[in-house]
Length: 244
Image (cartoon, rainbow, N blue to C red):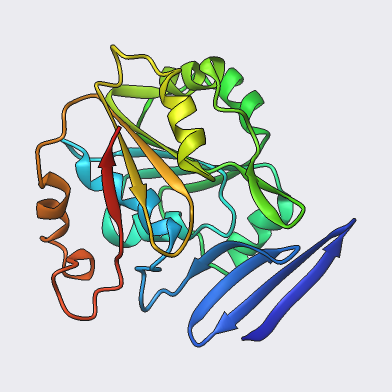
């Protein structure tokens, strides 16, 4: 990999590296974002954050992304879904700068805001979102960890900004943490919970749905998009779906 940019901020070393046309953001050696505009399927966890968008029963007009990183999932949403509005909230100003200048996060309807997610959520009084992607991570001892505990209060706050019929997506370092959060959910609002996983990492991406998912539904919907049709030779998408 070639080094494109690096900067120390306090005790944190930020790096943007390239591998062919792929750009990767690292923070103290931990990979935070990866994107290749010529091959928008990453083969990694960002694909899992994107896939629930295809379970929407109507148009995805408004999407909230909490935890932008380098903005890979925003670029994927623009490429595959084209929501009318994508709002990204990120506390780290370096991540925002990298997202804009190295990952090309821009365009009509895309807004990035610098804010602490808990405070932003508490203060927000605008229209609700059809899809909320919560990907709030830091690192400890070189390992990614959640930045905010997925307790009942946090889940209630996320539900508050969801539109009726909206989908909540949350990234967890492990299945155990996802299961613990699932026990805290609003059962009336989240009729079913799914786990998306990838062979590339240990992350467990939770999908909180307001309805029951039909057998094979996600596969059928993805099959309509050539780049996401895992039956096609050369498709880089790898995922496992589990009902919790």
